[in-house]
Length: 364
Ligand SMILES: *Cc1c(COP(=O)(O)O)cnc(C)c1O
Image (cartoon, rainbow, N blue to C red; front, top):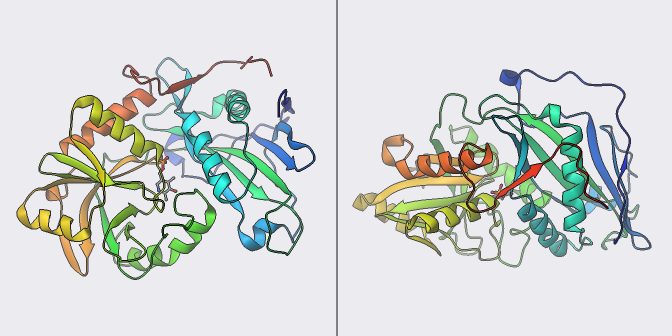
């Protein structure tokens, strides 16, 4: 992979950009995409930024039958001064390689891919919206492309990155959500693929999501796959609780996705001297804390919303209202700090920001 080069083919047609208030998550894509191929013979090669376009794939490609794929999700932000910057992109590429390992996909060169991603975002930098709370969502993913119906790791892969301008997650201010604790279906088990960011985990989760949506719950809270007692995560977010002044979150046990936002929140809390513990948490413990009046706040964490306060938890038909369905002070402080760093409004003492300079000129 040494000395990989990046080709650039500029689009001649420029698409119209949606207005800031009409941005719907994941429906509009920019003018360009990044592609790269893998073969056992050449390793990762053919890295190219090209006009956004459909890809051609053999109907027998392994990904279409056995789901051998991984993905990532991160964002580019526009600062007040017009600069464009990424938030901890190295963590996403490192995680992609962990997912790759689990799915038997060859590792990517994290440094080269970061360089290529920054070039891509630079080329489409006019697509990074500047309205309050908006951003450019970056979706890198890898699919197994070998035309073969045998169950075996593919010998060829395609790495692709597409970009999508997204609107503010909280158009009317932060709104606590209603979450239903899932007692029947499970998302992942230890030893399974829960800690990898792979499409199959989501395919397996759709049915539970669909059922609770009918009753007005936005997502499900997953319990452990064996005893269905211990809390794992919420839909596409990690989860935190503040009990009697202490913050707790489930420890990374092999079936939980290690969120970059989760890691950032833990970092911040430690920096502030707020007690934070990663450990096993049972749903009964949360119900007991609620009963005792010590369950002060709860929130989900993820790239899309950063912080999503939980106002109501439904467990076995009983509704547990948290903090009067209002956003807690700590939740708000974490949200303001992380978004403040992302948009360059406040200092970045942790070196989380990666600038996308105009005309990326790193030598490769
Ligand atoms: C991506 C994801 C998260 C959140 O990860 P971030 O890096 O914080 O965006 C949490 N849970 C699941 C299942 C995910 O796929």
